[in-house]
Length: 267
Image 1 (tube, rainbow, N blue to C red):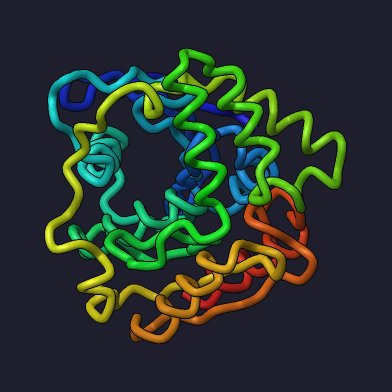
Image 2 (cartoon, one colour):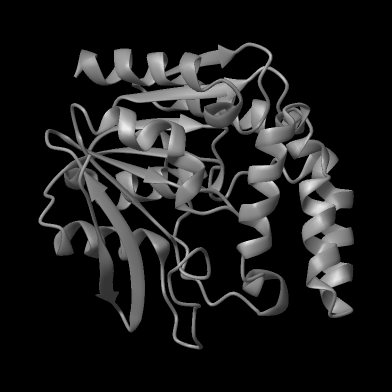
């Protein structure tokens, strides 16, 4: 497999990307604290029938850190698609990456073919953090003391990662990626421009076909968000991935890959 990699200059930031394969474009969007490597089990596989793209958001992986200038992840993605000459794409995102996919589909519906939303966030949802509240408070406290290493240990040891950590090799990989994370978001005031109104207030306008995947063992708030998306988005279908948690694409890659492939084939 030939992989094209490079940097796109987008609104004053260098965004690192990787592209492989030919066919209908499929873009993978990573979650908070991880980077493009979380899609290792999908990238090469789907490159057999798609032009696959994965990239690092600002402040993650090999992309630049945010600056004092305002930015938006959804606009960054639109401009990355322009840079790559992609008019329309399937978007596959996990957690905050799923929330980003929804934002793009609402802000730029003409650019989106379909959505795969795994353990997806939803901008403006009132679900809160639920059982992850204590983890986030402890992370922020550690970062406030200047101990980013401890903040990262708290995150990787949180209930959100517990199902994935049953596999020692997967636990090692996740720790490695989180260790590489800049931690910028814990030590700086975000200057991100969120869509207004937020996605939760417009989810009924999400007309793109959407496969909503949720791990059986995932956080109760994420479960509720998946149900909210399925209930309110007119073309959304929810599927539960048995014995998997928040990182279902890594915990149960064969199951998730089969579900994604069947969904994409429908289009």
